[in-house]
Amino acid sequence: MISSIDHLIIAVKDINDAEENYRKIFGMEPVWKGEHKALGTANVIFNFKNTYCELLSANGDGLGAALVNGAIEEQGDGLIGVVFATNNIEESFSTLKKSGYLVTEPTEGEGIDNKTQKIRKWKNLFLPPELTRGIFSFIIEHSEGALPSLNKYPKATINKLDHLVINTNDANGFINIYKDIFNIRLALDKVIEHWKSRMLFFRVNKTTIEVIEEKNQNDESVDVTPIKKGLKENTLVATIKSHTHNVPTLLIEHT
Image (cartoon, rainbow, N blue to C red):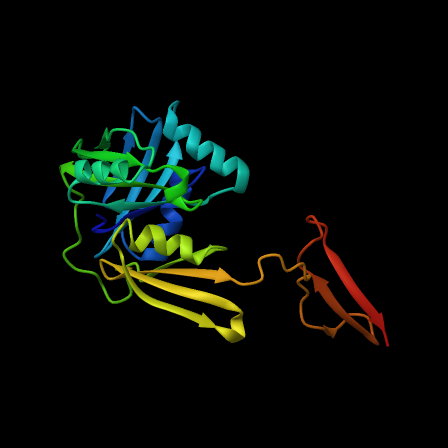
């Protein structure tokens, strides 16, 4: 069903600022700067060898703008979505529907590049919550147009998505969906004892989806930094990093 990780979506408030930052990080120019008029969003795309990274911001009204604004209001700029590609979206829709999942018919999508006025079109199949595992995701099939690709990636340029890390409290749930439904190859299923966690590797289009299941999800231990000498003579200090509700808290011992 799934042929690749098509792209990652990063929600940003200021797309011009984000474009400049990621141009520095990736060491290359974006291949697309456009908008989705129907969704109320603008985007900047950096293309890799095996996938692409989309910076997405709101620039109007629509479902896309609402998604971006809601995510930024809740957590600030950051990764909000993983998009999977398929070669036959109608078949994917039929398979999921026959399996009892509540999915709607694929919808049409269109984007236009502001500089070249080139148009790309695709079909989206949005996934119900029981298939997303808490991650905004959908399946896409590109139908018209294509992103420009770089003929050459300089040595210092970021050219590939190596792996994507997802935390979960239900590794078996990921196997049921990613392996059995999406048909993504499960390359590793291993318990790492000293980390007290279970690790899954799913592999598709030369990318690893690394899923980490923490065994002690209900662990209430407090995160504290290592003890070090304080600025004041004859003191030891440590900083509490969790459970403080954003109140900077320092532990101090007078020796």
